[in-house]
Length: 247
Ligand code: 1GP
Image 1 (cartoon, rainbow, N blue to C red):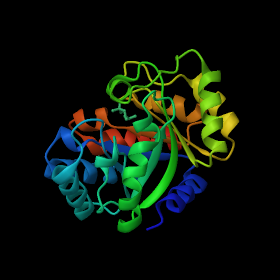
Image 2: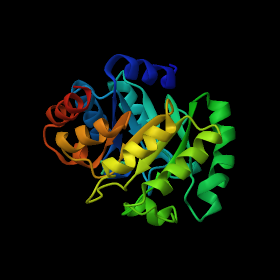
Image 3: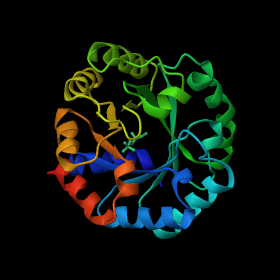
Image 4: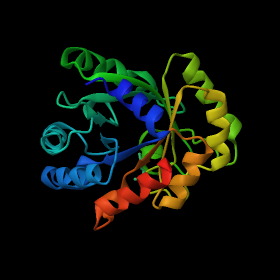
């Protein structure tokens, strides 16, 4: 499956993409697969699998395998380090945390992981990953020099640097469970600078209104994780989010 081309087609057809993030550390693989199936029934376009802590090894492999048994939508790894790779996924967001102070998150983990990506045939999708205030766990783990919420121009400068380095996607991350998502002003400024390059936005998006606001501001893809893991009726919640961003 060519995942990047597949997502591009969805953008051409629907305007926007919805991604469901599942953290293997949050539940057993069987439950992760149930959530993924329910999200797919609600209309999500792909399942992202990963997390900042504990999403590796057998637990990660089993989570990917179980999810793939249940759903047809693509599975995309969202690794917190080179340990976040699994040969069973369709693709990986091959990302560099550009505003990290730790060279490990900028390039060393990528060097360690690249041979596995090469051997396994997982599709790498190049991505500039930018952590914005408040940043949450990923900001702390990734030693990010957090981009201030009210400074879109700094996010624009990073996004342009990523684009000029050849990255296809830019991800504005507020941190999983953030109390405030990325501001529409920052999303709009970054999308204007990126042009055709794809913009993903996530962190703290819990309801259709916020998802719609982020999509209308210029996000090509919206990620929701926490809300999907917490809610009882996953299919209904995802359907609400999907219809809000695609309408
Ligand atoms: C985290 O952006 C993602 O990496 C999703 O965030 O868990 O807050 O939806 P939430």
